[in-house]
Length: 219
Image (cartoon, rainbow, N blue to C red; front, side, top):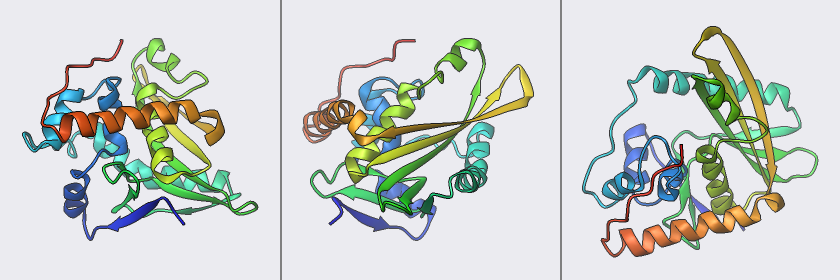
C-alpha cells in the first residue's frame, strides 16, 4: 500500500489552489532557508493566506522551463529504456501520515526489471559564472536537492533521478545535459532532517499562526 494518496485536478488553476493546502516540493528550500528565490517568511505568508503567490508564469525563464519539461522528459526516457514513466501534470501526491506534506512530480519511474519505484525530476537552469556552474559539480544544488528529498519522504520510493539542462549566459549556443542519481539508503539522514523541519514549520508556525524568524541562504 502506498504511503500517500493521489489528488487529481481538472486544470492548472484547480491544481494551484490545492497546492496551498500543504508544503510542496518547491516550498521546501524556502522552509529550510536555502532558497535563492523565496524566503521562509514569504512561504509562511502564502500558506497562512496573508499574501497570494506571485504569478511568474509569463517570465521568459519560467516559460522556457515549462516548455522544455516534456522534451527533456522524453529525452530522458530515450536514454533510460530500463524505466517506465508515469506523469500527470495536475496530480498531487499527499502523505497519509503527514497530510500537509505533498508533492507534484515530473515523473514516477518504474524499473522494468526489478519493479522498483523512483522519482524523475527535470530542471533547466542558466549559469552566469563559474561559481554557478560549480554548484552542479558532482551533486545537485541544495535548493533542488531538498525538493527531491522531500519527494522521497512523501512517496517512500527507492531512488530519484534529476536531469538538468544547463545553459551558459556567456555562450547562448552552449548547453549541457547532466543526470544525477541517488538511492534512498544514501539520503536517509537528509530525508529525516527535511521531514522534521517541514513538520516543525507546519505545526509550530502555520498551525499556531507564528511567523518564523527570517532564514537566508549562505551565498
